[in-house]
Length: 126
Picture (tube, rainbow, N blue to C red):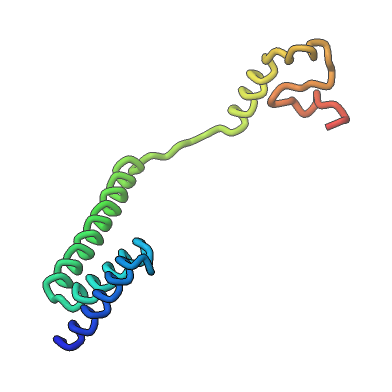
């Protein structure tokens, strides 16, 4: 491990020297620094344990949130049965839609129909 560290350290120092000579850009040096740092973080057992714990806590929180959503869904939908008369809703919509005033310029037009036209009153152009 020490020889690997020395090799990587020498390589990183060479990159820093190249940066000082303007042979590489700042972004490339930052990427090298991140890679150099990451290699040793991945070999650090404490770092890996902390990362595992963070990931585990993230999944626990997501699971708790999903359970809370399911609980709320069950709570508010329990015993609710809606009996809807579709025909009555459509007849009311037709009645209210027929009250709407024709747009400006089409007050006397027979080609304009309300938002919910009555099938018997539709023209042959539709």
